[in-house]
Image (tube, rainbow, N blue to C red; front, side, top):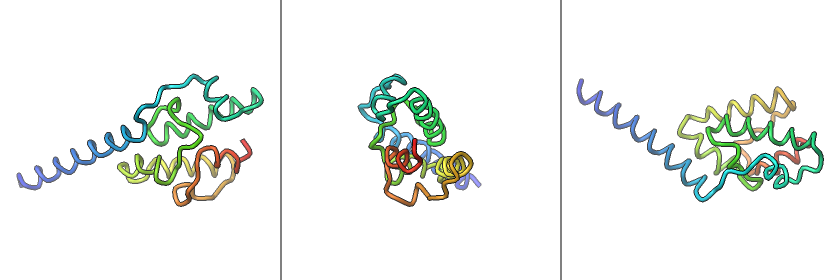
Length: 126
């Protein structure tokens, strides 16, 4: 019985440390950007489009458990955000995919393709 509890505890610790390390590796050296800086970075030429960019980035951040202020146009879903999410059994990818279906009618699986945030925005017309 004690070995089961010990094994479970070690497994849980590995999951927590692994997710933290993966997140840290992905976000290392990144500064939080203001909304205005993010809008410029994503080349949003209108206020309406800029607000849409920020609202979608907030959803991405929440789904994947990262601050949206640290996201960049060149961040990949597969091999980037999905690696952080893999420690949560893909829950963030599933949530974000659901958001894409509900908001945009997009059924393209983002975690199965090599696509950046900027590429996804282009596909969605944001």
